[in-house]
Length: 319
Length: 281
Image (cartoon, rainbow over all chains, first blue to last red; front, side, top):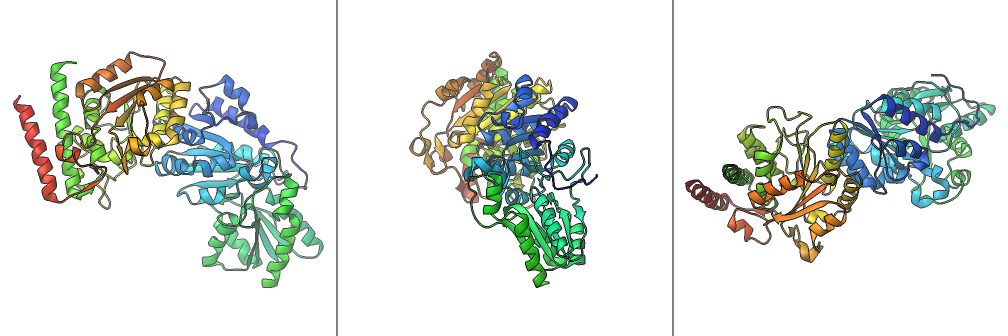
């Protein structure tokens, strides 16, 4: 894996990866099968889906049935990958994912697109700030908040071989480019992006870029902050988290999610028992989403480099 | 239907009912009404129709049975034990700590259980996924699904019916145990379903409505379904909740019954007496 972060946006869209890598997997592995609930067009899968109705099953606007059918396909020996918007792929189908797939030991992958503020113009009704909390509570699950298109591509190629319910939250547009195309990632292993001795920022998803910007700003003031990409929210890389918490003695978490049940919770749970240090968070307060552009919503909910900067200053005072 | 086969399956149904009531007796309570109402269908499926191998329950080419009304698991367990999937004495462990026979069907625990169910509506989608998946894998098997009538309240049921019809999944045979009752009372009073067969027909199914505690009618309906291609099949079973034990049939609140051992003994005595009379014929 090679880190190529310079603050610029990736010219490749997440949607481009979904619409090329998934068909490639379907063509190369007869056990993989794709399901959607009338949102194939939203991630560029419509053309492939219409041409290959036995490889890509459009279940109509019926997400609960889609997840149950995916569990049934797993029973028949397939490795299903099902997509819908994050809200539908999480809270609308939670009982089906929990029981038919999780409890029933039928491994499936769910892709929830447009997590948190990346739902933007679809607004509060379509804005999942709770999806990671839900899926973290499902025994044996994997919860990933994807950082950039290169990561998405590699994760898609390995995710179907994992047991349990896998939940991948990923925007459809793009994000800052962090990793070189072709990079390989290990689920359960966080990625240190920047070293620092004064504090560490554990970030995931779109907040990795904000964390890097905050660290840059702080560096100009002589504050030396580490940044770790914690895309693998579950399983959390507890070893790396503890190591950085111990060496810096001050932690800030940053996520595009409610402060309950996501990365802040996971990091706090990991550190509370063995390495208690001051922790601050940047996350959505206990509130619903709303409509607007992504930059507006990031400001509205405090999901910004500026807010991370403030929280680092705050946590340093508690050190 | 061949007369000898009919008699064999009737005999099997008696044995399932007796084993099922004994299973509940060991626990003292349970979902006995909706277990007994599906026994005749289980006797036909496991006694004749289904292509299965109790010594190899994971055989991919086998026919599969998904009991989406997962609380009727005890009837399925009695059937599976009699078929030799596991020892008969497991039946006395129903619902006890560490058992392989939980109240609701769990394929990870019980040999012969093909899908994990319990949250109503979910077995239907899994059965559909199995039927689609088996066909895509080139298997020639069928998937048999059992839902309750109260279970049809669940929206997921009709999502499943739409997709089954849209994809013309004709290796799916869907039974509805129309025993007219759900937990709180009569289906007609809580959520009237009208003509269930007509509903499935309207959804694009090949639908039949038959006397659901009649071995011959069940057998013939499955045969009839086998002769219709290009559509999923629905067989609406007009059943009696608690079927086969008069005292349970006549108990209004018979979804789940708690009773003393001597009450169970009375039910078993009646069942054994009916079975002896049948054998003497």
